[in-house]
Amino acid sequence: MLNTLTIWNFALLEQVQIDFDKGLNILTGETGAGKSILIDALGAILGNRLSSELIRTGADWLRVEAIFNIDHQENIIGFLNENAIDVPDGELIITRQITSNGRGTILVNGCHTTVAVLKKLGTMLVDIHGQNENLALLNTANQFKLVDGSDDRIEVALAEYQKSFGMLRQKENQLEEKQQNSADNEQKIDMLKWQLQEIEAAQLQDGEDEELEHEIKKLANGEKISRHIAEACEQLYGGASTGTGVVSGLEVVLENLKDLSRYDESLDKVTNTLQEAYAQIKEAAYEVRDYGDDLDFDPRLLDKLQGRMDVIDKLRKKYGATIGDILAFADKAQEQLFEIENYDADIEALTKDIAVAKAEAEKNAGRLTELRKQASDRLAMAIEDHLHALGMPDASLEFAITDAPLNNLGADELEILFSANPGQPPRPIQKVASGGELSRIVLAIKAVTAFRDDSPASMVFDEIDTGIGGKTAQMVAERIAMIAAGKQVLCITHLPQIACMADVHLYIRKQVANGQTYTNVSALSQGERVNEIARMASGVDVSAASLDNAREMLVNAETRKKQYAGGK
Image 1 (cartoon, helix red, strand yellow):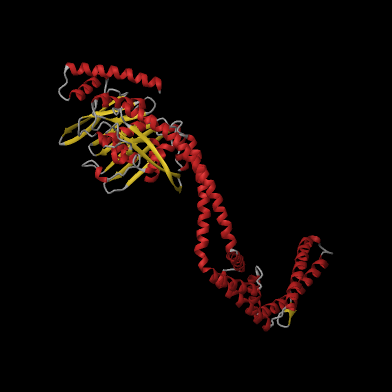
Image 2: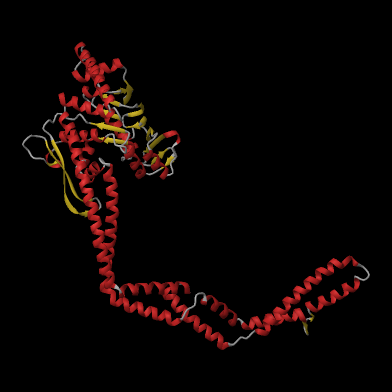
């Protein structure tokens, strides 16, 4: 539910804060006072386009902020959580601002977000009924939503159908892809066989390239390795140029320390440390010597290994960076070859799978069609009842469901047919319904569907009273009051019949001061409501008679509202 709407520097509005309540919130005022601006500001909060041209003259920015209570509205809370937006204490604060240079920001509970997210969120918060929404009824997708949303069983059946239809489309796509590729199969077979033969002929071993690179590096630097080993052995064991080596020198040191220990044991710890070091150095010296003894730098072996590496490098350039990649390429090529060589069998299997999948989809589509027909009959009857009460006693409305090729929504073609006069058969609504009739049809639909679990908690009726009056206006007022018995409704109106149904009556006033135009919004007291309804009803200066009439209208409205509250 919308609790508060605050607007800064929006067209005629310098700063306005409006507090709404549950039930029917009516907004009235003289023509040009700025009533539609309020709806535009609310639309900005719901994700509609916001232009810097709307910034009040003399200001550099505009801002709109709305506070909603979303307690127990799990679909909204879940959506916010999916978008990493916290919901403290069930309160939702949306702020939208734009500067004169066109830079805009959107905050939802303090988190920056996008217009796309805001639009999605807006559809869950408020349902706006205006001229654009009337036209939206003519959209086929919206007509399907209207029927499908009227019965929970349809949602289950549609999900089941779409699952089977998705499987059918998957199989059909696989068949189409195979058929498209069949023309190139002969050339592909030759290429794949040649690639596999080249890879298999190399008899690759995984990791072989790394071992080869190591051996080639070693053999290519054989002279340097030999020289380093010879110098290391000379330093360890001694030689003509170095004299005593490390190993021999340590032996002498240990003999002297052991002899010394007979006279003084204070160096025994040092002696033990050197003894351990001597053993490790001697062991290392053996390994260095053995490594040198095993060295064999055969130039023919180097040539052989480099030749093998050339073969691998050639394959790596074609099929992958490593031998593992090359072998993986070969496995994939083998799979492709198998698929192509088994083309006829695959086509036959896919054709059978498609037949099975199509039969399943058609069965589920039939179930979906039957549920839609049942639901649309009930829905049409309920809408007709409201149309009769809205001043169209001879109105007839039906949902025509005819066969269509399988698609994502089933196997149905859906069209709303309407007739306003007796003796005229129902025809497509977009061809026969006038603007006023379309407006009342949508109102009737809203009255039927307003209390669906997934419908927004707040509804806005903008220009619902265009082109109506008298008894019809009273019937429209009663329908809106019925809806407001269970939902928050915001309604801009020029008709006293609708205004007298208000739970909260807000008056929009335009004033001029210091050469500037200002719009203010204030809640009317009971006495002020009587005056405003008298003004709306009489269209001239308020008289005692018009005031008495206004009081009577308000009393009658309260009686009606109690009836609706008891029957909601």
